[in-house]
Length: 231
Image (cartoon, rainbow, N blue to C red):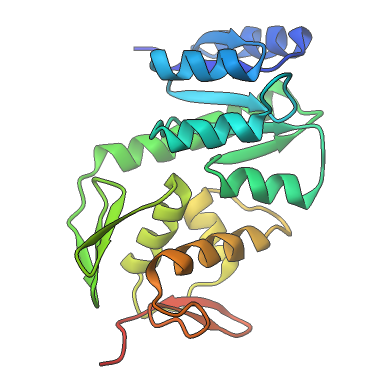
């Protein structure tokens, strides 16, 4: 069955360009031209991925992403932005987008990014991993949740994938570049701050004291390491 992509952009030439190239590559497409229409379609139909422009009339891409994730819709999102500012990139990924692409872009690059995201999502969905216990933290990959001291914690998709990646590599020092490659599936050249933002969010959710973390340790000059809390 063909995978279905929702294209969200208020510029009709871009929608037409993406629609043509995606359908030529075997995808089924639908489109929305503003944020409210995007949310309505994403909440009432099933899509394998959403291509979401940042600058939209009415409700911008950040708000669309935020609302979908708050409503537990975890459809992968590729965010498009005409801005090349670090703030936009980090904020979009922080709120639950899976990837971003700066305009202008080539259709081939969009399709390559979409295929990379879908490969990773399919791989995650097809595998049923056992839970991982570290200290009082229990991670449930099949639910994208964890429990800390018997209380359920929820995460964005990328927060959870980062947590799970660190947990699978417990006691190993993982560099920021390794985390970008392992969790985001390709290199974000110069954007290692994205890792730091997500680590900060994880610590807010699982660490008793974020200034003295006991689960996710910073190894200066090298990266991060997840370990059992000292007893």
